[in-house]
Image (cartoon, rainbow, N blue to C red; front, side):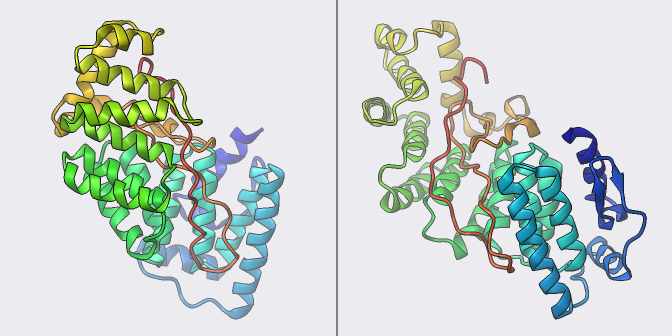
Length: 333
């Protein structure tokens, strides 16, 4: 049901036809307003569209609220119609672009999400939500430096979000900047001490930097915590293997043979530039609707979690502090 409709919607996001509204799941309106065309021309020239009238701003805000209601009901096709209509009514709306980006993330449409967040960033270069989401997308492809640059923008205006410090810590760790990564993890943990994904990534940084006993303590605490899962036990197994505790490692990872565990361990012990090599990158399928994402490193917990709808004004949505969900075991990255 969704495929046909969103084939058309993806076309809309990359051409002038984007400013046409989807009428049904496989049909498109046959006309668009002069204002919408001017909006498209402005975007292609990377120039802000002309000012929107108060009436059109109000119309766009109403359409965003309608789209939020449709998404709340689970009708993503209908939500897309409303959000695209909101952009057509007000091409200056950062909130509308953020909605479209969030919806595309839920649909695993990386190119659409990237387009929406880049447009939002063109309209508001310091918007923390757009920067954060663009950074996440960069990170899923191993572009750690580009991701860190985006997270730095987001942190300028969102210094109280542990999710951002978690993501920045991962980006810095992937570049071998372990001292700077630790600073970010420490800041995140000061805000949310029981953030399991952040503890997990901190432990992986300890492993990569050679602090094996520190990593063992970190993962042991996670294994013994109420949030324990197979991933934390598997990560402890890698540390135990690095320490020569093979029997303990195999007990922690009963479903993984020793050769596979050593292969995964080698990824974390490799020089940072190897950790971001193309063979470890992932596709758009990494972005999921269940608050998790794959990473160039198989046991990293990224912070991807589709943002809740923001108020129908051009203000960034509230930061989420919910930890990311776990990922599949490293044996099948």
